[in-house]
Image (cartoon, rainbow, N blue to C red; front, side):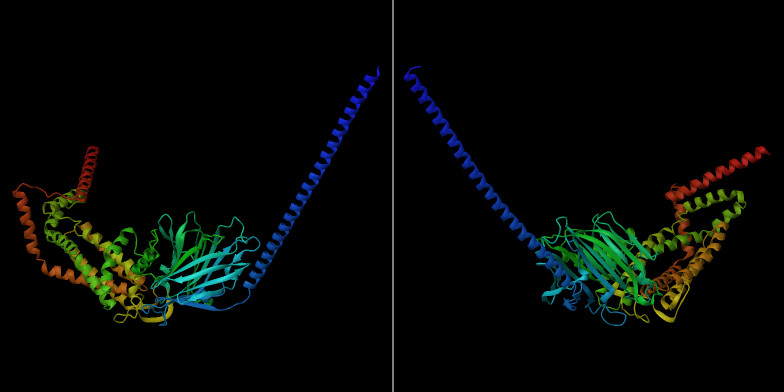
Length: 639
């Protein structure tokens, strides 16, 4: 290898070594830079973690402080802070207790409604009623009846009751609607979004009350006292008011409102939209319970309503605290401006569907019109009776004339009885009797149908008068209160069936029924009847005389207004029957029937077209006669 080659290899080695040295140095520097970058990034991450840890620590301390404050606030809210606040409008005076922030007393200011002692009607007071809201929290649940609220922003017709919870509060804002029996209740949370778990969307309402006795005696009042509710399917239903000592019910559908109902007054809790009920219970308080004397029933209902923990939207409730007067309930419902059919008027019981329509669209309007005259309510009942009796007089007259026509045909019926004296000819005799009635244009059912048509009015007033609050406290003759019994004699001790008193209007009604029965039986005895019918009427005579006795024991505790109506109505009926008897000439009536018979016979009109019922009776008689003749023929063949 020459010198030049050796120098070339040395130079190449130096280049390679230099490149390797340079590449190695650059790699080391890059590694150092990468390590430095990694350290910086690690330091940044550590700083961030420290910041997050510090932030979490601060947040945890805040939450702990808030829970501590909440616990302290709830503890403080349970400390005794007694006091009440009164709000009122033209018709209603409410007392709101700091304990629970609930309405503890409801008094009606309308002078029309008086208590038995002569003062204003008090629906409930003190411990009679309990209204509590239950809301689930993260660490502690809220039951408002355990807390003492503070009244804020008090006005004559409204106030806000507040209880502190942590850095926020629970508020119940009360506001009375002017010139009404309505009070709005807005329930809201302020600054408590962290206090409630995310699943809290509702609050529970527990409402209990011992229903005060408002009317004399209490027995009749108990019949109409019950829990009533309106479902979201627009059905108004109620728990049974009679029978079992305790009535409970669970539910599958929501309700618009629930009412603690008495005979003449109600407390209705109305939802902003709807409630989900879980339980309703009504328990009758026995008379022998001296510790709860003056109370009729114990009511309880458990409801669930929507609740916004953020406080953006309040839970809106409304209570009606007032009389069960049809027009008043209707007017207050209109004040609510709801787009739902609440039908609060259904709290005034008007009877079954058919009877309810008679009361709602006839009796009620007639009664309200006469009440507006400002006259004594006894006179109103007198005029109402006369109007109704004269309205049904054509039916009464038709019934009487039908019986009279049968009476003047009695000689002809007796001739048929002589013509068919044998028992085996009974069906044939009946056929001939029906044919005779048809020929003379007489219907045996003509006297019954008009009386049946009057029955809905009779039953309608049976349901209307005891529930007419207009009669409450109104006197007439010897009765101090037309809405309850007129006890002219009261011996103070219950006797089986009759009770502890004697109602004079009830006695007079029973006597008038006896007079009416005697008159009716005299009319029937003079009518044309077969021996079988006469025997039946003889047996029915005891039933007719037993009815006044049964009604006396049943109605002795009913309202004197109802008994007066029935007494006066019976007397008017007797007078009408007497008048019809005096103005009906049997000879002229028979001559009229004979003339019509001859005219139809002359004109070849034949037998008068009978009613479908008469046709069925004739057809039945014909078939029975055919069957009887077949039996006779079979007997003859066997002989």
